[in-house]
Image 1 (cartoon, one colour):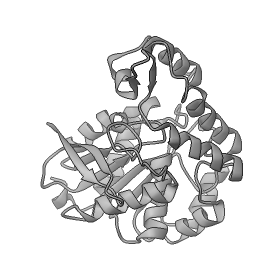
Image 2: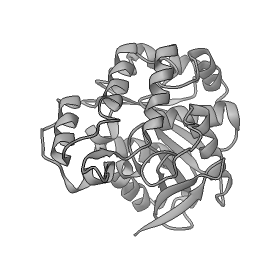
Image 3: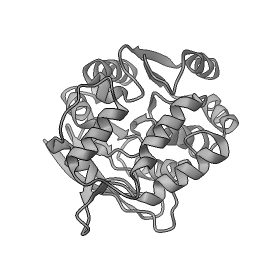
Length: 293
């Protein structure tokens, strides 16, 4: 059974979360990518709960049902500090699974801000070295309709289909409603603070990557990782190349690695079952089974 939680970020922001699995299970924080919500982890949370883990899927600040940052604080370090604050309030050290922006935040949280905050770190299609074309595509999609919104959910569904041409085209589903909010003008807008994408666009113009941290800083954070690490790449990702994987594994020689065939940067949505099996296997192998049963 899924329960709703309200957690608190570093600056007092209310962080919305869903928890699934036994209260006594080892906690696993699930941090989504930029522009998404905690709903992205729905099937994965159920899978992990079935293995005895306490899956805690959060909405990052400025996303979904979490508070917006009135001061526009949406740097990677801000998201990272929220993860550290949340982890510190749990009854035991959690594992962290972060996709894209959530993974960058996890890397900075554990490798720079507060080493030792997490029991393990899984990075989903994100490394310090990112392909410029892939980054530009992700940023372009998020920015394209951030301000003007959509006339209808079906229009939003069409835009998503154009962004993900490898998936079957479909009309707006009930699930899409969780990613949109309707304003008094009757139009539908992404379920996140427009100031978030403004910051992403500004930083992308400055350094070409997704966040405020440059590659040298991210490389240093990666080299500082001493906890168990799992890198998961989408086999067809245009953001993380095989060369970027080799670079990361040189920085973090002890890291486990999974390559998910027929998945793009959107690994979780593209190959949910295969991805789920990979992360569940890593968590069960890494952490004491007495904590996960």
